[in-house]
Image 1 (cartoon, rainbow, N blue to C red):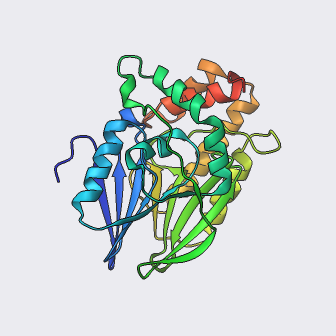
Image 2 (cartoon, rainbow, N blue to C red):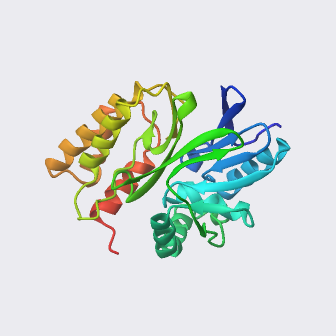
Length: 278
């Protein structure tokens, strides 16, 4: 199938293939991960913009296998807005994520429409949210073992990552970015910056001896990305400790990491830390 918007990188793992489906930077360079086994498909996240999510659905249909279910890893809109293109499919998320999406959906849909004043229809005109509570732990998907892990107070209050343990592969989604500015605008449940806890989780990933990491933004990579992520978060923490915010904060990060993509996440991080009024 010829794709107009999306870029697909396939990771072959024996009889299982992971399709890393990447939106262009206009769609926040976000990834949906499609796990293809011999007989069926499992989709992890749904992208953000309507044209990209529609093309993702067309790509999935072109594979000729049933899409058994969709997992939404966390509440950030670049990972679930596209659910509107998959209405009617079984859609699961952790219970905390379902609650946050329902609470914030109207606000974030409106906020993102304002980011596209000349083309508002690229944002869904309705909210379609997961309704089935996903369960932590290992499950069998057409012979492939998948381990679903809940992680709290990092890039967002509740995040889902998935392991394919037999292949030493981590689908980290937004716990790891590769070549893009990671979002750091969330606080912990106690109102503190999430950076320290996030670093701790990343260090625990280092102990698991993964062979490959499939991130939420950027290309599939190796575990060498983990110390890079830790270094980024430590730098951000230092800038915030200096009291930087606004353009000073954003410019300091861009100067340190000039080759990264997705400046929008820096703008949103600053907004959520210093401007957002719930």
